[in-house]
Image 1 (spheres, rainbow, N blue to C red):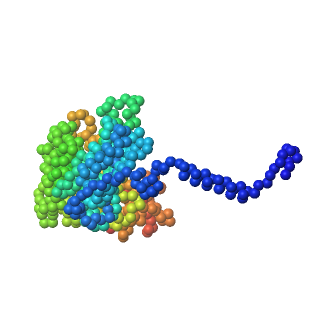
Image 2: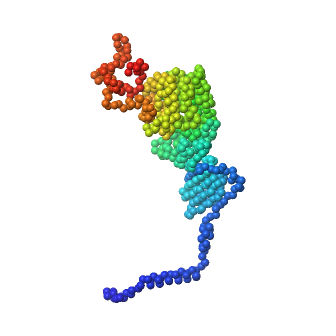
Image 3: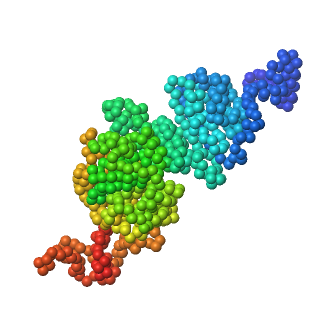
Length: 630
């Protein structure tokens, strides 16, 4: 075919012939290359090639007798330890041999059994290792350039992994400015009821200790101060500091922080919180315990005209005792604490909570004050032996303060204290005729709570019911404090044997402030003895929040007064007004030359009408005769 414009010739070629020719040529060329080329360097045996590229697994042999000592069979549960360390020397993190040695040593230090391990040096840098343990496994990965290692250790069985943290830090934190973060979790399913109550159950993430200390991986400080099992309970004290904590007032004074100092925005100089846990339940926080203990003690002490003899149930840290000793009316204090070891530990590690050095006329350590008698005995037994049914004891108390476990914490201690009618009777019998009792009442309710006797707060509801049913009870108040440092507001219960205490409870702010001035011990520092409590604080306690009313009105049968929370618009309302034309009532102060106090109706009031609803919104007291007349 000839192209007229280009004056060139084009030839048609069958594409099938072309492809066949090219394929044949390529096959011949490959064959010639293989036959004439050098011998292959890489073995053609695929299995041999894989083995050559895989480092040898290091095995550790244990005698058969050693394996039989391991508890068996295990539940489907275990413990998981996560450790992150930064600031480590790069050379260490890039050395497979040194890291493998550290891993083996860490396993041995933890009392665990290494069966085998495998490490792999990565390119360009870094090492990954995994070790198979008789108990489960250990693994880690390193980033030499960043100075970081992340390690995790999982074991089955009851042996605690907490001691391993120090060994891991000692063996892997190689460098001058290393920082370790760690987290401990209980994993799996604990099917045996006895196991759930074992030594490790208080470490579960459902416990306060697990939530506040064990689980968080981002705490800047997480230091164990005390962990001991007393004859009564597990006692744990930890220092913790969150990464984003910033300096408070005391830290600023201590380090003389000035405006513009960059340390205002970091946790560099922040004092860690010291936390006390009993059986895994949080009891006190060093930076907010004063707000809690002031809220527990002072509203009741100032609602009594002259509190001289005081009894404290619990309070092993000494903080309740410290607050009581701030009152100059006090003549004697009996503190009944079941756990002597807790008091000994508090003296050494919680000294700020039992420090009375600033109170003029008090001992340096509150426990040692001459007014104080500390009794190491079960408080339930102590009160029953002295004030139980049929007991006659001359010495009675003006105020009894219960600083025991929260009612919702459960256990035999809570059952004995909050669910025993005989014990409640003994408490009331221990009080003078105008005596007052105050008790920690646990987490404050919310409007979403179920009927109180059905939910987790049933112990508290039963405790309140017992006082409501007691003939000696003249008044009950509940209040909340949101500044205790806990995750939710805390609540308190006050029980009075004389109705006059309700009037004192409702006094004006200024009157409480005057009492605080008149009735508290002077301080060496010239500072006020209380940092949180005053008349304004008391004012916030006078009326309980809405949630208390909501939960109260969910009782069955429904309390009659709950029908009067809202008024029926269809009914007549008859109230008192200073304007006589608007008022349905009149008040007389004098009649026939004599002083009287009387309220009488000025108009006919139909049956079913609301009478004095504005006044009904507040508490008032009428005589039995007046009630019968109504």
